[in-house]
Image (cartoon, rainbow, N blue to C red; front, top):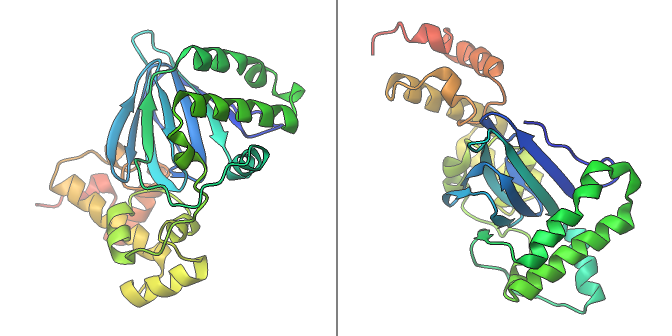
Length: 272
């Protein structure tokens, strides 16, 4: 699956696939509004899992880890249209309409709902922006984003707290967070942000706690989990490398051999 992103703006994304594929990005830095045109999206996030089905809309909160598995429908098609609701655009919208929100949002980070007539018409109106991205501009893109926000607020006024909470993550327990989320393939800076720390502060606290740099710890932790999955749960290497945070199978095999002296396949010859 390769997402098609208009070069003039990164506010609208059209994704399609003809076979099951994992999404690459696993950190969500901005709110996302997505409409499932066909097929299903299976989403694995920090609080659990859920399925976005055909003709459903997902409103996903910024600053979270999530993995997505694209699954074509019976017609072998998978299509999703996504709108990135960037904080900059939402702040501009809030300023235009005198919206204030000074409390931290504490509800669910992933909300699924059915589109009404306005939303169905809205997503149809995005087709020119997706098919002819070079003919749109930043102002046009902002107008479409603002329209989406207006429809959201008209449909459910309670979305206001979700959309306009611009607070950054607060400082949390580092060890607990890392042990629960090491399998997400994301930059170290994303781990730092979600634990409420600057990059420098994160590295300092991490080394003090784990006695090793975060990048090295993440690789070691993922490889240890790989060994358990292969040797104790009889998982195939090709079926697990994405699940535990490796970008590709080749990188996984190389890292595994450096640690254990054997490739994942060769290690199966060892008596359990």
